[in-house]
Length: 316
Image (cartoon, rainbow, N blue to C red; front, side, top):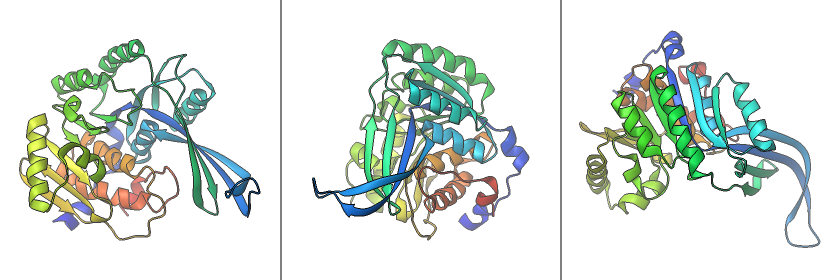
């Protein structure tokens, strides 16, 4: 059954008509690559001689990029600072064909994650960030309402940076408009995601909310209880090397991870939920989308850094 769904043929034309609204925390991913051939005399740390720099879209911007890479259309609603990093990020986003709606807070420091890479390994990560003003976030709700009618699905990408303070109001608007709502959650309070269509926690994130489980039976009971308490259509648990499990009103559906060499797990969750949202926006059910999202996640961990999967790769 899973094999049949994985091989299902969704035309490029169907995906091209799909329009996904991505809302959430964005960041600029900076990579400094260098050579490491000696240890510092000042402290027992490697000296990295930087030879190359790279900048990529991170957070919700990477999610939106994954949507357009599959051939669908995407709009990105977010809040950033009015700084050098935000303008770099906006240029990267617009260069991919994503429709960008950036609210600017002059007191906000646009989130930047700087990774120092030596010998193909991440040696250090530096994060620069703070929290946006509540007034600006409230104004984003009006922009959200104006964008909503032109989209087939809404995806909330929560990185816990403060950009989704009004997510409950946005979910209510999307629900009343009959739009599928997919959420990549953060934190231990999932009540803010009430009445969404599906949330996609990983194992660590889910444990923070429902506690540990002893076996599959207990996991299913806890996930179904969570689903019913929050009024969700489904909970999709991403389980790394164990694959993924979807818990819905019909029970549960599990797909195994596709065996491959794992190079970098950065952004794999972005690819999974972006693939799910794109397929749902194209009219595919959550159960039918599951094996394809699993395949997309498996493909992206074989790439370095925040990456994406093309239509051709997914349906090869």
